[in-house]
Amino acid sequence: MSGTDVAGNIKVELGRRYRFAAAHRLHSLQLSDEENARIYGKCNNPCGHGHNYVVEISVSGEIDPATGMIANLADLDGFAQREVLDPFDHRSLNEEVEAFRTEVPTTENLCIEIFRRMRAFPKAKLERVRVEETSNNSFEYTGDAASDSEAAPQGR
Ligand code: NI
Image 1 (spheres, rainbow, N blue to C red):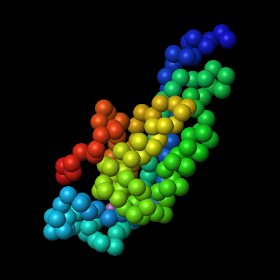
Image 2 (image 1 turned 30 degrees about the vertical axis):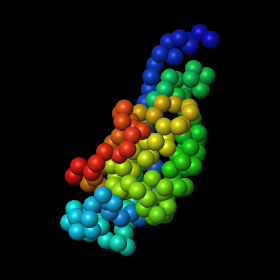
Image 3 (image 1 turned 30 degrees about the horizontal axis):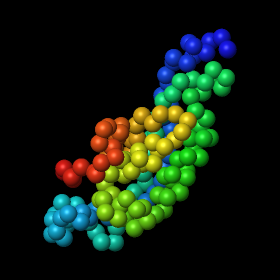
Image 4 (image 1 turned 180 degrees about the vertical axis):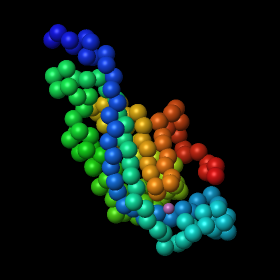
């Protein structure tokens, strides 16, 4: 019992990395075939292409004085496995993930979709989702007010 107040006020952030491989094709239903080809280049290839994605999930919470942890990694891993890795790993994002039947599976949108799924993790607060598409590209999403609205128009 003693120490609960102090420990309860300490907020700690936990980061955990996951990896999955998936195929995608960048093709916007809001653009003509010519525009898609021009904007996305070889990423518009009708047969798709793949990436080895690295996802970093950051959650925060107060340290449980009994366990010394903010959340059990096994719980976080199980949740990520069920909500993200099982549905995405070795899949076609365009064809096998509902959200990407209409949204373009850019890594920006992938970040948002993973955030939507991980936000329901009950044992800690989701702070951030970071996705590396390649060793040179990464995207981060922190769930601002627009997190539930339609994805913003493609701005690049
Ligand atoms: Ni790609």
